[in-house]
Image 1: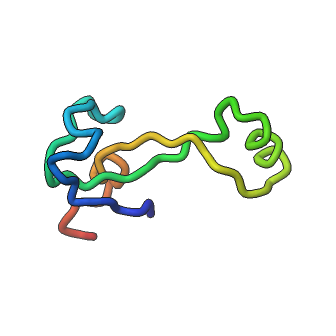
Image 2: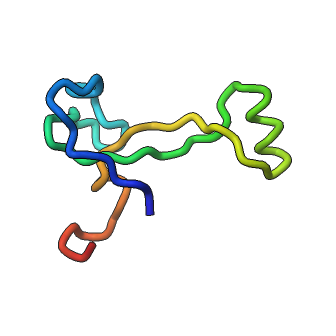
Length: 75
């Protein structure tokens, strides 16, 4: 499972921005995670990915509950 970040402080830069998964804004005390999207347009990262080596990926922040279908009570 993805790493869980939070609770989000009220002055975090992503407060008010929409979660790409559910379109609801991030608010104070939210828990979020990062979803790796891939190497993006970074040529070096793309070559490493093609070779099966570790690379820094482009990632999207989403609400933790948007990334984990397991009900919170079962976690």
